Length: 411
Image 1 (cartoon, rainbow, N blue to C red):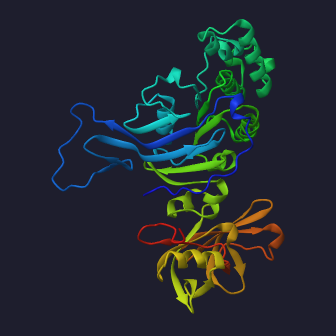
Image 2: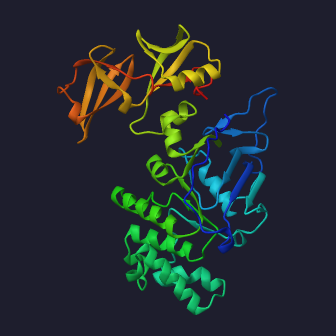
Image 3: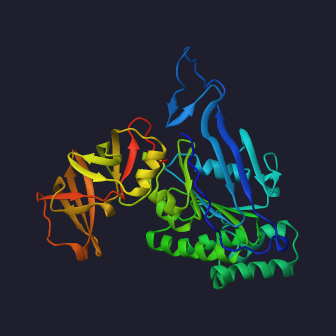
């Protein structure tokens, strides 16, 4: 499936190009194939289709982990690669870092081809999930280590380490060893060790996944502040859509080695390119139904078991521009856009969850589990297990997906 690229967002104004190095990154038709180990390859019958292994394609070359990856990253942009485990996002990041060989395609940083450049010469820094701190060194020594290798002066090292420590609020821990720090403090040190080098590109591979929920929230806020204070480009990998939505200028959603969609957080939420993106982005997940797309008197409508809704003008225009024919569809409606009505689609309540500002109603309808989010102020009655209700939705919030291709029919 081809990636869908949407317009780039306006970025925060950067420092003049002449005052610092530019940090653009281009990935052109990047591909990663893990070759067979000697004797591993099995004979394939003639006309047999390439098989799948953990959803990754197996070819005569080997296991394809990343395929047809194309992305232009602007100077100082914060890009997030997101997707389920095994989708190829960390492999892509490691190819940018030089830790994985690029099978095919071109990696260009600031106009220079980097495919065969050693990792130490790419002017990048990487922050790992595991922190990867030296346990026998103090925080100061950990942060200073890469500068010492570059033969920087003691004065320059001290200045950069203390500046980074101040940015990350870890000055008071500079004399401590990593074992005396909490997980959040260790991750700050790992980030500090990366930023003292003033890299052109900062790579982050699931840096918050080892932290508890409270610390993850705090560190997300710290990373947002950090990117405003340092002149560098970020490429961040996560499987957590909340991190992706809160951190990224643009999000790259991946599945089985392919890009599914590229866009701002708002774009991928409001205009998912396909069924996978629609189900991956958003919590709780989008409700899906078997429905029909109709056209009556020149207008498109969706029909869910007799509940008909005319689509809004924007959706009408997109469907008409694509000359979409009436057909069986998968209808998507987010829980927050699903409303309780006097008349509509019939449902039975299974579970009612009080979430503070809203109530999450889990109901059975059309042979599926459906979630309806109702703001507490709008709750007119308390629903119990077994209660019946009716729900509906507006023509401006529905998403129509092809049964055959799973693509959003609007795009």
